[in-house]
Image 1 (tube, rainbow, N blue to C red):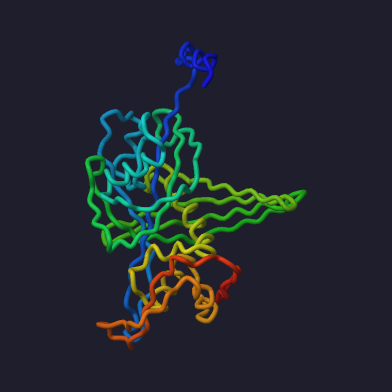
Image 2: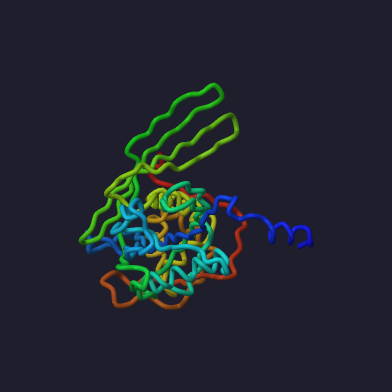
Length: 312
């Protein structure tokens, strides 16, 4: 940096500039077996999300106290001496005990007032993990931490024509629940299409009994992003044990994509990602099946599409 620039930052009046804070939020997904309805078939998978209930902040204002006691995504403020990625790793470990988790940046939100103390710019991260490999426990910043089943469905759809295209507004109901708690939130996703240009934005619909801040908006964005990524990446394998059957893998793909997938086209899609072993599944009431493991040397070549049943 030049002396002139050094001089500017040294001599400028910092009080003349509005200060903002940077935070990180982590969307951590996993999948478990759902209700066993048919003893002759593997149960469907259920998507889960990790949420925390944060402890009371001694520096909180009257406004931010309204968020206390609510469930939220793990996260917190970025310290001045650390990078955003480092903050995400630190906060996840501090609040949930999860570490050595591969996370990728999801989106940066230019929030104006979610923390209600000052302008906050938040970077969200997403990860898929096999929850059986981790022990979650609340740390010094969290009162509690739990896995919740998470789902999202469209409850209203409005399409309005414009001079050069149309505006599509979809209102989603997001439900997070476990044996004791059920939380519902609404998020409106607006897509503006003008010619060949499309712009989409997520808008949180405030619910006093919902998740903390506008975290429902972040979750809906993560769900949409995950559906896209599962089609062209190996992200689904983050939820799998070392050895698995094709049916077990397909169940995971289906819960991530929120659709039932045709067997033949699914197997064609994942064929290059797999290494067949000589082992068979054991200790289950089903007929023994061949076991596979992830092939880390696979490369994406042809972008074969899934054949999706009941596609809208």
